[in-house]
Image 1 (cartoon, rainbow, N blue to C red):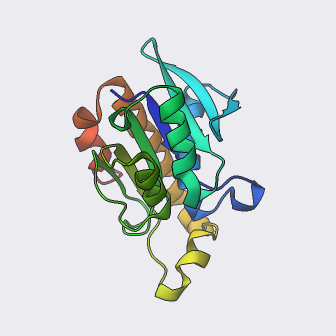
Image 2 (cartoon, rainbow, N blue to C red; image 1 turned 135 degrees about the horizontal axis):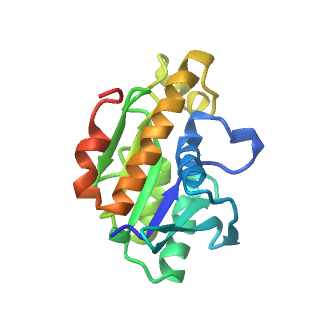
Length: 191
């Protein structure tokens, strides 16, 4: 049962609307649906407490910057005495095109530095992941610039649909289970 949802991103206005922050954006969309704005600064994160089916769930946005996300996640798991399997991490994925999301129950980092940091710090990879596609840049040497860039206007139209679907996927996972939500979450958007 998911007790902690972690959206990955970089803190600060400078990064707010960048591709690397779609994890933050997706949990923000979830928080809007759940009408939650108040958070506490703890465990190197902004931590929101939400009610889902009369059960408290923590939603966190680490403030450690992407490459050190594991420090915040380790703090959260220890502070709230949670197991990695009780956690869902939401983040951007270069290997999925914009407009796709993919729910996985566990796995490797896939080269994502935020996920690498989490796996390294908590010494486990058995946590649920919701990957949100941002696509790859045409020039392989410009990945860093690409993930730290903003979406163009045509992409933003797709992005809003994707974020709505991602937040709905998170909610379904919280209300039922990740296993029961797989078909919905992994179906092409628009189906």
